[in-house]
Length: 393
Ligand SMILES: *Cc1c(COP(=O)(O)O)cnc(C)c1O
Image (tube, rainbow, N blue to C red; front, top):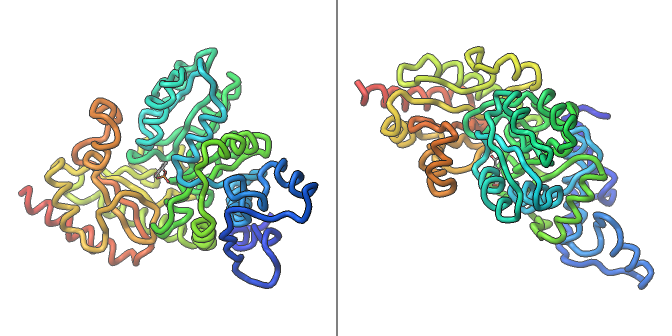
């Protein structure tokens, strides 16, 4: 196996024709076969790349191969979004009567899936504090089939002890499925710790440029094939051009992550001392309550941190208005620094009671550092936070 930088560039070498250095975009919904026998053969293949694009496409196969190798697993598939990935996984693995454990702090869409959509089909769900391994243990029932894990979590940057929680799942015959969007395989490889499936909102760091919406699921061929059988029914199919764009983004993932990690750590350290800031949530800071766990299971701390502003919502509004380089936008994992006030953004996605239960405060601002120069970002945030402090004083 090659290093991550090499894998990101060459992991799909045998999946496109030699000659063209950049793989061609196969913008075709369907594929011809030379005989009926050959047609039957491709139509009955699992994850074919030359039958019908909802079933598979060469551009899908290239992305799946590279991400699977980066995550250290057999194979994968791509979907039209991160939510397409997790919904397809859930529908593939669960039946009426099953029970799911989901974290209290997790992406809002994952919360909606587990506590909303799935419950309409007879699946029950328990939300747990992910920082407490015993909370997972207490939530297990004889019908628990699936643990939906996300670490670090969006937007509170809480961690799950992957080794302990995955062991617990397996001891009870349940699947441990990990959302690795925040860390990426550059910083954390859940499959090496036993995760059954790893998925991504590839819209974020994998794509990396805020120009494509996509999802990826990777794991053993056996499980990925099961997810694929459901994917061709749910039909959350990624377009070939978007798949090609995603692969183009992944080529520079290791380079970008190194910069994201450096920028987030530098900002988190510096802003922790600012008078307008009550707390910085970043796994890379010794002040993070799970810093030791972060150092144990991650090789870098990622590009996202959150600020708890002492001045609450008005302070957050001032900060977002004052920032010049950092853009107010949903999403994260972009070359450009993005900031968001989660209480405002998720008010429309997650219901009020759920939102209050997540622990997301009025003064919380999530920062996804881009790959701009560290000094420029530091200057932007310091000036904007000075304005917040000045207003409060
Ligand atoms: C954005 C996000 C998702 C959802 O992905 P989409 O591509 O928007 O569907 C899932 N998990 C995490 C951690 C995210 O940040």
